[in-house]
Length: 275
Picture 1 (tube, rainbow, N blue to C red):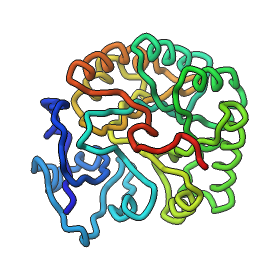
Picture 2: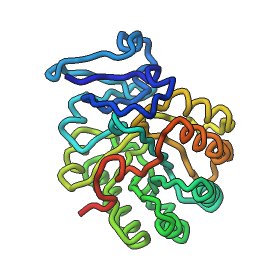
Picture 3: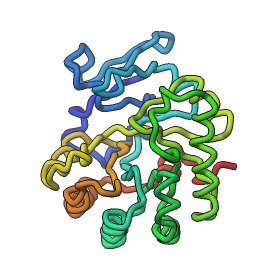
């Protein structure tokens, strides 16, 4: 039996409770559509039932079976009071250093999904991320929609970026996040066979829209639950000061509620390096 917990169930932030339950990885976005599951504090679905989950507002669908068959997740275990901060699209010279400063101030480690082309432009920032104890993940070379490229281009986007990050950070990252959250089953299969792990997100801050720190904070606090993977950005040329400033509110408030901030390798009990 698999239990699907809605974000509302964790609104009181009972982070101190260790839950001994079976869990599934589930994007919080799938609760946006007013469907049956949204009306319940949780819903249970038999193991052999094929569930289609709407992964985002672009209308793509993620079969529930994918998280069982492949190294693929949207969030971590619900029985641990842990959350993971993740930052996509960097590095850059403006927001990534500011984010690193905030993380150091709050003594928190995060996971950065970097683009190969940006890593080539700003190698010293990549090295700083690694040297300060954060985890680096692969976000492809040039941010294509992987669902729209052929197999050779898909693999090239991953391997080319891996080579760049290995050279700069000193290891070949195990974690991949596909741009826009879009990925095909055959691509997941190949990545799993190559010992990658693909991690999406369960809380989208929507910081890329240039929204305020208060909006981002309310979004995170209102939707986070044990095991949440929080999506933020460090995109070159973006309007992300609100995302930077929100860290001063998100981190202490979730810590007060008992949440522990961890990197993705810690959350999933695996290596940061593809071996």
